[in-house]
Length: 264
Image (cartoon, rainbow, N blue to C red):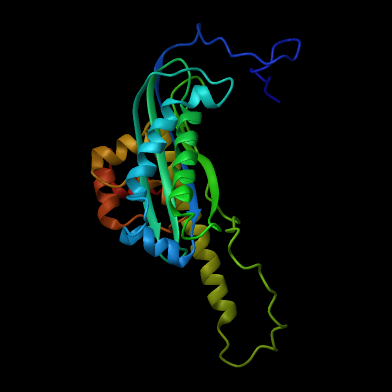
């Protein structure tokens, strides 16, 4: 187990001394998801929330929160941020809004907490802006998606297999299946689905390895390619099964590589 660096030899809390660390380019991205009622979701998307533009307010709140992280989290270092971005993706099928926050700096300590704080406060702001419509909204999946720079190097989150929304109904076992009938291809279909899932998982791991081995930072790579960074994270975290062909082509060109090299 790694030593807890925020505790001294007597077990007392301390701010870690980073004076001996090397200054490097550091970047981190985090996500949070707000699950709304159908009425609240429609009001947000249509711009009918009485308090005003939900996305504009939440974006500003997330950026401001990132800048104030050291004042909110007791042992975080004050950091001179060089960039903070907050993006939103709507999912009509779940009545949800996914927040993707990224932070950058050039310094001696990372910006994971800044990205997480930005995503969290942006999510809380969405709740505040919509609570007059529905107070039952929930915030979930607040987590770090990636970080780069520093001694520990690159981290990219694994896919979210097995996670279930707190608003999703519990799994109810179906009745016992009757004996197999002639021309019943369910077993074959299940095998094909399992094979496809394995293939997707292998491509996702290959893509993650490609990013790591080529020192590609998701936000910068997406910017260089002119594509939404949310597409990269959605694939890496299992929210989508694939990257659209046109976006994959742009990413490959930006990385000076071939599409096939990214997935094998």
